[in-house]
Length: 237
Image (cartoon, rainbow, N blue to C red; front, side, top):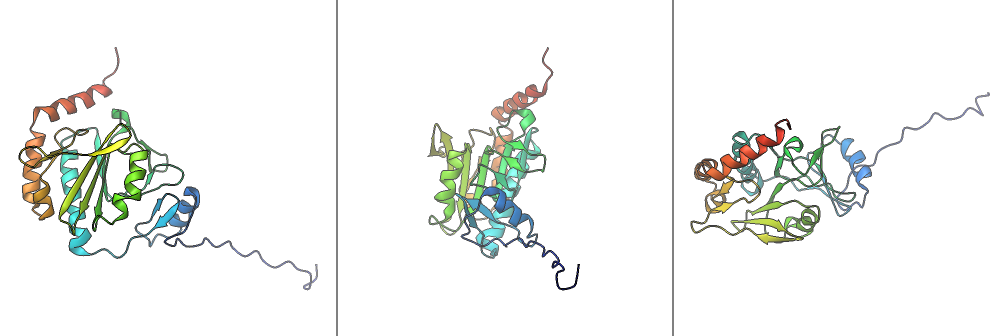
């Protein structure tokens, strides 16, 4: 073959970058996201790419670590659960969020979500939590509907600017707001003993938050829940 007729070398196919507002399939979203290791967070919500702005200290970073500490402390006393933050969740073909924090019952203990061979959560976790700026956030609108539709049983949104925490619980096909007890404490119905003092959390008083949680962990309902989880692993006779 002469130099004039020689075929040009193949040009490597470039993977387009993720851009906020892109309309993508879940597979294409993952392909682009995996090619961008410098991007720490991107989500696919109803087929549209969302990428957060830079993270501020008291508007996100501090609430995030306090929420994680609360869930991690519960997990430490509750075998059969797993707490995680910023974990990508494959909910359905158009939705792949990355909750700020979540809690699951592990599949082998009867949990509703699964862990894929490539180490992603598939299906709705029992509890998802998000740090939001205010009521105008996507977390209280599109994402709430997505979590509800995919069976996330409890959903927490900490509205930092509003100094408020919304805790939703799935009843049937609707989210109801979890109501505090007479002392103002919110108590999970899915994870017995997971108690939250929202006033302490919103004023960044982690010591008080964990003190209330320890009261929940010492309640008989938590001990009974741990026992139920352990019984699931017992060999059937």
